[in-house]
Image (tube, rainbow, N blue to C red; front, side):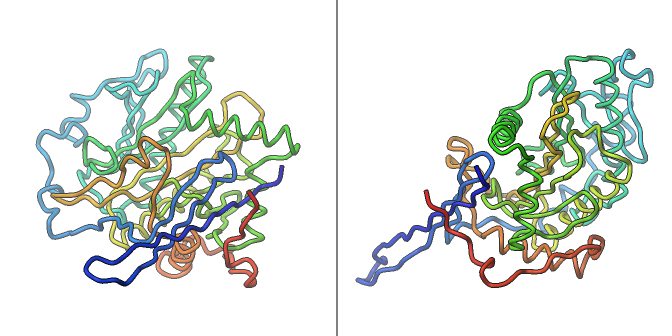
Length: 366
């Protein structure tokens, strides 16, 4: 069972309004090589970009924000003493505490900074690294306290279009005895690939994508940055940590490198006009030596403006199928160029577009 990059091209034809001429629009249906889920890349899909002039009221500090410095210690909950006696975890500017809305058994929130608003270019590697480090400290403490906790993820909803309830920048921790649906799908598919091939899917994917050189952006140590063949959202960028099975296997150097890459992608999002995003860092099952690898995905959402439309419709929410505007190859080319020039932090091992036989999407048999 080899990795397949299956893409079906369709052509939609319709008569123009007001005349007898016909127009044609192209549509690609792509199938994820791990999960088998599909995504659609359609001409005419648009994602609203930001309008900085209209964001003044959102940037202003909110006197009722629970995450601002003068209120955070008064109104946020504390971690149970059995997990950590301090009640909250602090690393640099990050403050971590339990989530009042428990999306998981040990759900937590990690506030990045005392600043009430950050443009995406302001998410510096240092801010992100401290936030990740605090999150890892919390997951380790919970795992030590409760042996039934086996699944965890680091997540961000930034600004209202992403599902965030507060603009003050923060991440959210999922720590639970049970995986989410996406985790379950990943673990099951990775196990099936291992059983069929005797190899790790993620390592094979990195090798295949590196050989094709269409979607790989950069590599920094064990971390490979790329765009996915069948995206789940707009401008999706992924990272695979080839030698790390769980989040708890991350070293301090891994955290620094991962933070630098996330910061770089967010700066690129900012440069193309977006200010809202989602991020998820998935882990293999804690305490299990399997074929899983830590992997990350991040996507832009409709930009935050006073009046905005959601970028999630029936296709995404009810069919679990993304409808997007650009191919991942085009996104990878833009991010790759940004990494090499404007940002320049992840240029140790740049990838080069290969010969022409790899530039076009390979069409696999159904």
